[in-house]
Image 1 (cartoon, rainbow, N blue to C red):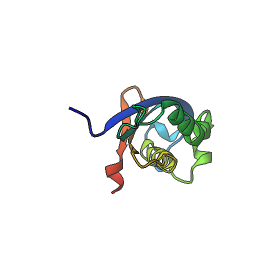
Image 2 (image 1 turned 90 degrees about the horizontal axis):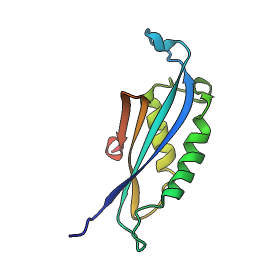
Image 3 (image 1 turned 30 degrees about the horizontal axis):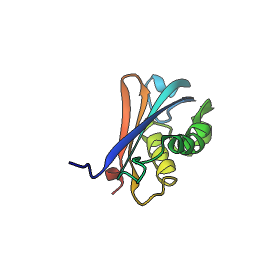
Image 4 (image 1 turned 120 degrees about the horizontal axis):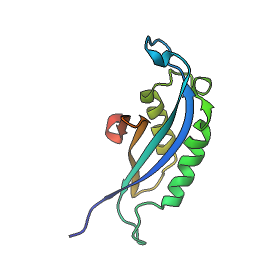
Length: 127
């Protein structure tokens, strides 16, 4: 039996500060997080037995996401309220726009704000 497609995931971390606008809880004040980002690609095996090279995925995510957000104040970067949900949409778009192959696609991301709280997006959420 041969799999039609396989999912591959790489995990990243970055540290950022933010405060939430239009919010009455504690997070309306400046605070920081060590975010964990899981990036999952899905596709068919290529001739070399890979869906996508992990080192290339690391390069894309580091350039397009991590370098933009790590040790930054998110309210100064984004023109939207930097909730985990809004950040996840931005992250998904940055990665999807830079993974261009005919046999592989960005299936989803999971952005952990804390050890017990995450936001998840899949490509179906954009259809």
